[in-house]
Length: 330
Image (cartoon, one colour):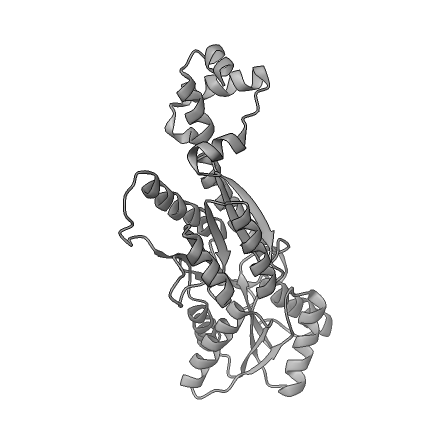
């Protein structure tokens, strides 16, 4: 580190600040230090820094799967904000099950992460107890409703279901139905969808295909199952865009007009939604911004702890909202 400081023409402490908190250093100075690091091939001893500061500069992040684009976008937003502050992500995939999350939480705590980002708001008692004992900042993402463990950023999945039902009703659907997967956040969307239709005197039919991930095949099968239960179905809310696209593809194969015979609404508004024919009406979630806000919340908390300030409880919950992007399918 002394050699880097000499080549860059700065104090040793400035090199340390560039490595630990680059955003706190003037751009020109930061560039000079980074150029010296590259020239000398210097690799900092992260273990030594951790021992000296009691910080690992690592944030653990657990998502159900990396195959869904919206989780990848969330990670992108989170990673960018944290990287600018000198933090790195340690990623884990729970596979949509509580035991997977428990194992990852134990692993991450063993790695002495400074904070953790989780998906959803439903946790096992074991995870709740371990995180409470660890005393590190925790942000739960992609759902609001339950009292968070610590902090939360997301939206109401229940309200998403309500909005989808109202949208189908507004376009004249008299027999709306639902296709989804057995997953807590999707089930909340179904609850909101069902409750809204019940207020209008309707009892929707639903087909829940099983645990995620979804596939085009499962979406097509679910569509046929719905119509075998009630051939009058004229509107469908799908718990994700994969199932919704599958429904559109199957309608095309069968010669069923969309939206004249069946209107279709998806969830998450992935790029596929605007590209397929007919284009898919979908509930848009700002996935990347959701991740970025989670990062900002963590940095505020970590910064307060470093400065010896107590947490006032402000900024504990961030509602990112959602909107329905109306296209040709509904």
